[in-house]
Amino acid sequence: MVTVKELRELSKRKRRDFIYSFMDYLAYYPAWLFLHTPLTANQVTLIWIIGQLISALFVAKGTWLSMFLGVTAFQLFFILDCSDGIIARYKKQFSLNGIYFDYLGHYIANPLLLICFGIGTFRITGKILPLLLGILAALLFLLNKATTLNPLWYSDKAQQHLVEASFEKSLLKNQRTLLYSVFAFFRLEYLFNLMFWGALWGLHYYVLGIYTLFFLLELIRKIAAQLNSNYRLDKRREI
Image 1 (cartoon, rainbow, N blue to C red):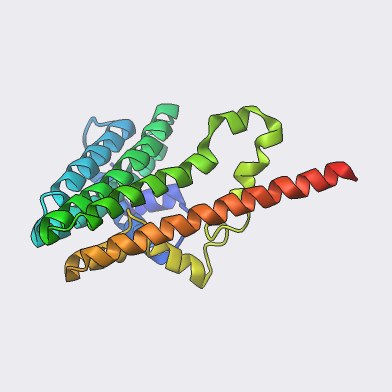
Image 2: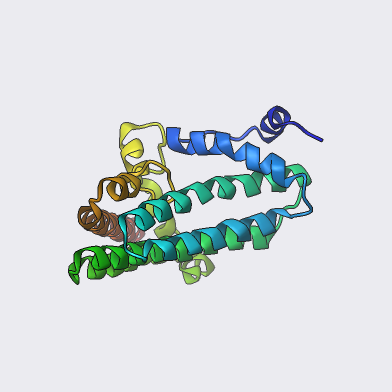
């Protein structure tokens, strides 16, 4: 059976930011364990999705311990998210359903975590505003995805530039900058991110406000970039 070191050499994965690289480094250990089982890469994907959904619901229990442990567990399951790709490459189990499940998991689990974080904070504080912020943050998260994942844009070549425009000036484009490291600190799946420290220190209220503002600013940036791209293309057609 292959060793963890050999797995790393076979994968030759391109590292990104520090936290992702650290979690990716850890991902080879559960991947090696799963290779000793009959589980497929897609089944491992479903395991981390179910794990994140359960963790998010645990956050909604509304105690300091449940929120901290739920957020931590949610982010630790991201390690399995990295593991399934390692398994797929080693077993050559390439599957469109695997990619589909992966994206679907993120787009369900992440907004659910925000809503449950709002519910948990509501139960701790007894105030309705955190609940509303959690719902609003989840809505803004999904709207951010909607601006770049509309399949109708892909079917019409005249609209494909809208997807490209949203990433043209995105922090995700250059992953070696300080600004990208700041952006990574807000990613919901990452261990030791803003939500992790907010849950640890009991700053649930502030965390929800910051995430709501963060997703709002990112949505405005994407829409502005797409409108600007439309404007530039229209000007070129006039020439």
